[in-house]
Image 1 (tube, rainbow, N blue to C red):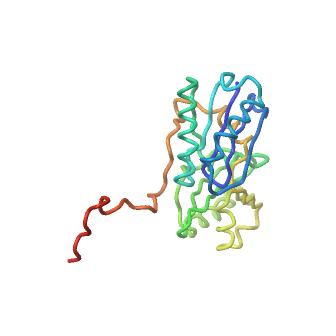
Image 2 (spheres, one colour):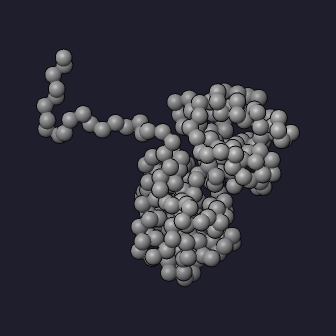
Image 3 (cartoon, rainbow, N blue to C red):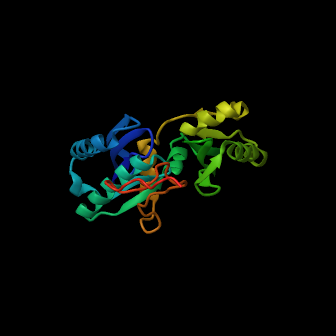
Length: 230
């Protein structure tokens, strides 16, 4: 199966074409802003480099969050538009699942962590590659407690992966006893494996928001007078 994978939810802009799990063309550019300007060109380049163009694609995978509110919508809108134009299925991939799958192997416990700011991380725990619960927004204290409890059952140190790993280890240095991989975004290879394994019916390309946005709607329309202070 020929796959196009897209990720703009975190600290990189990724577009890659795979034949099953074999990479044909990969673009991975670290960035925190500017995904919208770069994504179209990267997708064009990988489709051309992989031969066969867009028509050769069988499935599109895109990260749905948690992550940047603006960034993940850039990738989702692009993937859904391209899927509709090509009449190809589009599957949604959790960024936390993709971060965990980016490690070299699935042995032992893994905590995938994204810095959610405001004293929180987006987190999901895994054991032997299987999730132990849903994606969640947790305070640093709660996340650390859950991670600290895992080795009691597994007798293996928990590996931490994702940008939230550094934040949590800074607050709780004992957690750094296991391997720490503070990568800013999932690997293209992990995205391809999850896209290939996904059931399109069970993995819709819908944004996964674990917290309300920081922005608030305006209290008045343009041109309207301000309300007098009571």
